[in-house]
Image (cartoon, rainbow, N blue to C red; front, side, top):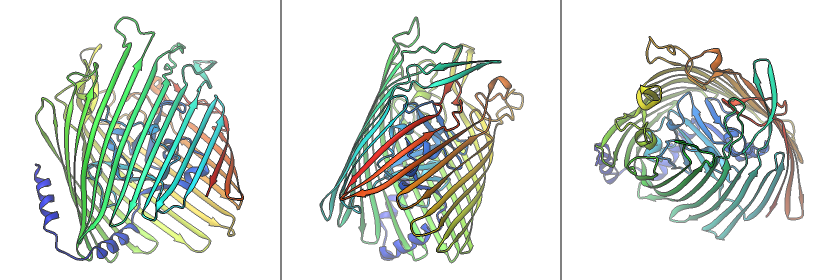
Length: 634
């Protein structure tokens, strides 16, 4: 048992304080001061986004690596940190991939998502799992309400270019006043054979993407019970089979590589008021299998590989208020992760314990939060390692319309199984990658019956040490994972959200954001990359969305602009990846026929038909059109 875990267990057993209603009152007071990024389903569905990554691309501080098309892998980077530093949760329960440390955002459905919440540095939520408290940033994917919604059934289908089909069906049904179930099935299918251009000097040639087809099946069943305790359970199954297009290097575009993914998640959480304590317990089981095949493999090339993971995760969090202005929370969780593959030595297994204790104090217009976390992990055949983290936040509201805040956090991301054990390049002696964050920000809000607007500005300074990178060791052909990197990051985020109500039926909403990130390698002053911008981090990025809605019609316009990037840390002209601007528009007509609501939509993505790459040699689709219909029976 870790020292912090022992303190948590003693604290939760020794509580004898004020009633839980006081806790709730203080928590609600804190919630009004929360300044995180939140996107609701109405905003997501207005623009007919295809997946969660499309929504996140429009948010400040966020960069999404997109390997092209509907079936391409999509990972998130927040304020220049690697994707392993962002914890992704579903309904507040952390998800994981011990093999790579990175989760593909394409796995998770957008059609059953109620809200996306991205917390950077520190989260306002006090009943978080310890693993979420310990992460540098947290993305929570909140599923649709069940009990609080009326019974309904929804059918949707989108048909688009490149032989793209996206049907889904959703059913929400109350068993009785205290129990309800929710079921969803969706299929995303595309041939992905879009046109793109290659440039070589002054020569430009047109090509069609090869082996870009994908099929993604998602099945989901949720159950919710509300009584003396609140229970929410989920079973989720994801099955995908896709081609892996070749990187467009030297015009060799033919590929027959295939990848099949299967992912099964079963999770549950129970929340209960126990005397004066708010208590939440949760558990998750995850099984995933990834199968790779390359029928064209020759010689030593990898022809086939299978990776199978199993993880069990369980924990609790508790919250109480010893005085009216103070909330204290404690959390602990345990996970067991296993990986089996011929490509990874020794069938690795990891036991991982995380504990966290937090305190939040509010006095008049001042709010302060502190937290302490401890991680202990033990890999099979290795010694147990302990890691401490801490964080603090202060927010001051001198006026109803103005909020000032400062945040600090030290966290670590553990080396993945691939980092440690992958054949030939894994390094069992790797230390964890260390991150520190400091941020100063302000938020201004204004509102009346017609206009609601908010503007925020945040400056941040981040540092990464012991960065895990692959470097040549014995010679240029023998590489290994090493702790050698150090990165300094200075950035500025600006965000505007404005709503204007012309009449009861006519509304306009505009969001806009801009980010500046100076993210440079400071590992070795003698290195050719010292002081150069880190690979794939644009120095300038901006974007936004405008939505006009009327009684029966709505129209949306989205824009994402990224400046030039470099594919390697050496910022030479041959490593430069030009910037791009992606714009989309969507038109919708909404009406009702007896007991059925229906929505017809037309969407044009990449309306300027810009030929661009988010990841070098993986071109994105050009202009495409799609039409959809959504029927809801209540």
